[in-house]
Image (cartoon, rainbow, N blue to C red):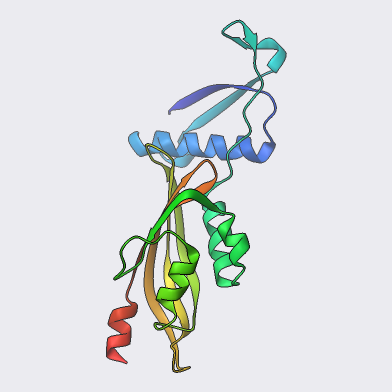
Length: 187
């Protein structure tokens, strides 16, 4: 029965603390073959006035946003064509790769590339998974695409997987895999 004890400066919201404890439970289960209910996490909060590092009182850093929420907000803004809101989720060095493209750096490049391929696309999510990588969070979204071809005919049920890298609450990379070309070739 694994037990994790964490000392944390006071000041985080209940939602942030819940995210932290869930993430620690999952990290333990990534290595130790324990059922979820067998992992205990104890969070011991320390008032900032009772904490020093380097001879100086410290305050807690703000919690990072849930990287899955950052990605889903971006995708929702893209689907709604709220391009300014979508852009606000992207880091300065953002790069994306879609099937058949090289690296693109801007939403405008993506829209220009997509224009002759489809009029619009909607996503139905079957799963969203997030985990910490070496330099930031990795988020995978997967599910099916539906939408409209340039000739106004509809499509649906096309599989997709998107992989995102999120650093400091900003999306820095998006890699996309889907079956649009295979489906379009059969139409």
